[in-house]
Length: 430
Ligand SMILES: [Zn+2]
Image (cartoon, rainbow, N blue to C red; front, side, top):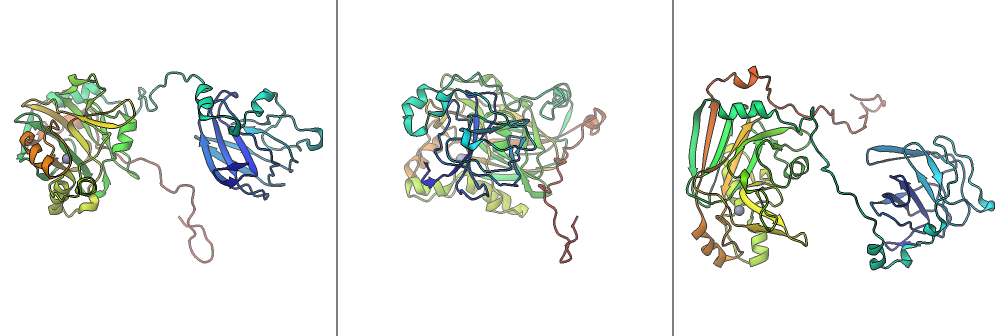
């Protein structure tokens, strides 16, 4: 059969569920040689099976091991199977031929995981992808149970914040260490030690800000917006954490107060403090409008970090604070006007020594946003400053007395299963 333009002579289905209506992982080999070449993995095609009218071959003494979805599934095969459709599924604890082979091609004994003939409905085997239109496939799509969040925090999860502690820290007496007001369409960076509180506010009314965060001592460790989005939500608020990238994977800050938490979800699905989008930048602006403009958030952040020895390449995906965004019915990103009033704020507790950089977005409060020089002139009418304050707790041992410690990197040792040779003599390295 032709699959994506490739003559496929080998197909193995690794079943990740309990039955034909479940979810399948497809491993498609493109080489009829005894070596099964795994070319593509397709997941989550419920309810249909691809018909392969070719023989497939597996190593006579081979050993195949697939590691998919966290479950290691193995199947050990001793012999070839002759022509005709053959279906094999390999589960975490069993492997099985789905269709009974014609007598001429009895499957050989399989060692390792047990294989037995099972009686899935033959009709399923007639469901070839070639016989199904997209409409058919859509119509035959099985109901999907309501999903549960993938990273729902449990009682002992690092995602679960000690809200009593963080609330008491937020309300504890604090001492102002640094403050400044960031003018419109500009950027600035600052450091904040572990255990300090950073407050960013809208002193004159609505204005969105694009925020970057690094480990203060190592700019390779920086905010990872997409992982944070998975761990918490597309829009974050009090007691959500902003996590760092690999190989560090630890909180940079925890949000301890959010005066816009009331906003929730608006009538268009918009929410505030956005992790869906990223900073505005002059490159896409030129692509879209042809013009040149040097005060997009990306540029503002780039200039902001230069005094700290960082460069443009250190600027990364932001959290758009005070910014309302969402996805429309077709999954397209949208931005709604900032709901902040004078004095709205977001407060972060630094979980390690951090460097932050903030841009007052040239889009202002996003009530007039657009692309190109005309929009830049128009949007300045809705631009306002942002205020930054860094505090330390008056009792500097407050957090530690309560058992708080600066965040530790992930304990994964980072070898990814590899053993590095020690040298020419082949001694295993460390
Ligand atoms: Zn911007």
